[in-house]
Image (cartoon, rainbow, N blue to C red):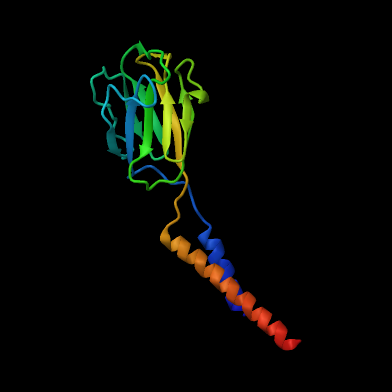
Length: 184
């Protein structure tokens, strides 16, 4: 009886260990959107596998203003021209999990020397991150880094271990109840 209870507790504890998911090796999509979040008039979607070091230059009909480099835990943006973003309801990019293999996204500014960029320029939900540059200016010295995390998605083995622990806990409780009723 004591062995079953100990095994059940160990299974439940071991199954609950989860860590934030990294971006390396995952496929993310990038879409530049202007003049609102529903339109992408300049660029086609860009799909990349995050390798941690390759700069991405979004292709399209518009002058390339910046390079994006994804890391395991974020995104670094390096501006390559002096310019500004036109005022609009949205002038920025959206990032999403292409294959649905990442958990819920969160994003924040890690560092930035772009005047006016604040947390209010970033929005995210479980599958997407939007960065709205509208009305901001930049030059070749402008650098912006974002922290991006994705909640861990439990592996099937984790679910199996947790269910085993719950089953053993139920079995242990059932045996205790039977033992108590036999003594009464």
